[in-house]
Image 1 (cartoon, rainbow, N blue to C red):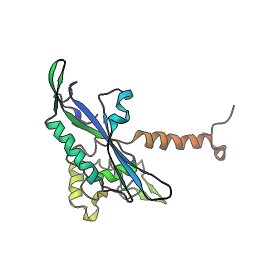
Image 2 (cartoon, rainbow, N blue to C red; image 1 turned 135 degrees about the horizontal axis):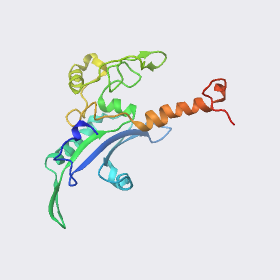
Image 3 (cartoon, rainbow, N blue to C red; image 1 turned 135 degrees about the vertical axis):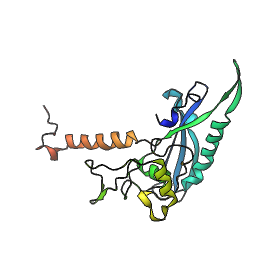
Image 4 (cartoon, rainbow, N blue to C red; image 1 turned 30 degrees about the horizontal axis):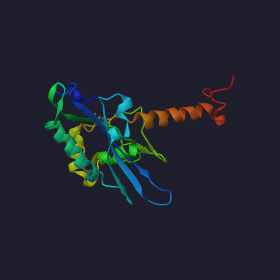
Length: 222
């Protein structure tokens, strides 16, 4: 939960909190056509309802090239902001009710996250969205965990966005999210790709790979 969620007026059962996600997929192996979807998950709902298609898909884009995400996201973000301020009203058995919608945070894989935040990817200089670690190029971009760098701040990101000609601190320009959510705390690491398909997958390969049978961590058959 981010600091933006600590709002006692908002945290009541008549308000809805949404989580935004976008990602792109190729439609055909033989062409460059890709599909980018925008999802909004209602965090108040239990998973069985939250992840139904009719409750998640908010918009999509199909084209021959990668889209400018601000063109897709900005109308959606503006509408969420309007619903956060004005809400929408309806008749209920208890009488007229007004429900407001608030954008809580966004979850993206590393490629989509770089596009949404308008910054370098993980394999580029200063490609970490959380801190100012520049990384080091050693065939691929490596981030030494034994070094310490300052945590990014919203003010620093916005200032870097305004001075984006030099790609300061890995920021290419202004993010479409900058007026709507916290650009550091509101974009957490993607657990599925970073842990389950990243670290966990790499560890399983090392434990089970016969080429590692001479190592102490190799999982031998009993």
